[in-house]
Image (tube, rainbow, N blue to C red; front, side):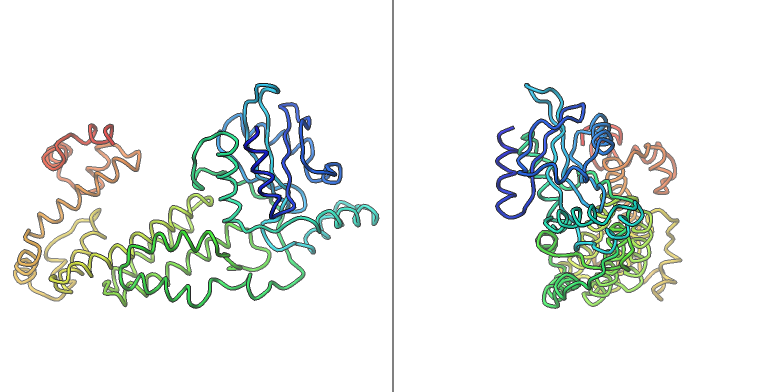
Length: 397
């Protein structure tokens, strides 16, 4: 436990934040807070019971929200001395100090004036730490506690059902959705197909602030949804300027919008954000690095990749791009070295390989989804391309 205690001391060099260790019965074993009784109203027996139940089913840390919109980094470890213990670091706020929401919560609970003054005096001392930064601190604290390396994708979020309603306007810094220069650089990288944008976006996430992308009553998940929707639109427009076919960009935008709204948690939204960055920038990058290909052929490739799960006919593509079937076929083969039919089959096999590794779809479902004439034909062509059957590929990867 020495490492987590040291990590807590490091945190305290920046924030007024404390380490709390409880046994499986909810009894406080150790705490480095000088006045732990002052914070007892924020972490009650019911909270500790919920946290303990959570860690009976999960092994990764959780950011947990308790009364008055206060938050805690929570984790679990087997201690030689005390057996299973719950470790918490907190409390803190994830957003600007929500005074008005706290006052309303106290009014609902019919708390006495004297008690209100005490609660507010304690809450006034709590630090406000950005959500992205807390996610990083949670990863670090988990490593300090268990020596296990995880990513922010592994974290669990347990947001309070309470809603924030700040009675003070945000500062110019906290309401800004990224500086103008940072946004310009991001869009430049999209237009130029600069694959370095992935590292750039990670850097911006670690130092930036998502800002308010919804009204004050909105939950954090809604704010993140809205921020991601704006990002998708910006990426789409920048990609078009970089040479992406407008119809392709619009189709991608529609699909990612649907993915954002279908997301159930922060993890899902993070996955969509990464896919958006990879997809738009990757497509522009391919255009920029294949300058020997005409705009028509690049647009045709985009069209094919977006319709791999549909019935694709040469007649439809010729009509879409305004050329004869003969001209389109000849132009495509001259610039790519393969026929349109061959390209479609290869692209479907690549997509099948992706589905085998990243989804739970069966071989028959993938074969049907990607429009192969039969499952046996799909298996035969897949083995011809990858040297193993689809099932062997899935197990191997």
